[in-house]
Length: 79
Image (tube, rainbow, N blue to C red):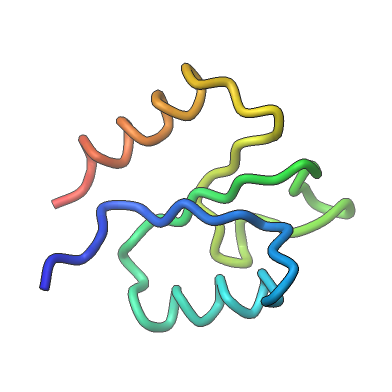
């Protein structure tokens, strides 16, 4: 199997606790970066931190250039 280069995840998933999902993904595949899409700012004292396993984030409304720039970074920096 070929693992993904990056995981793109919606943080406001109605069916799953996103923090638990991120922690599980990091246990299973610690080297795969997680890019989280959210309507909320994920900062210290206001939400989830990078320490929780998020490698990067993008906010709604998503700007295509911003998304492509972040995805390209991971596509170009993964083995």
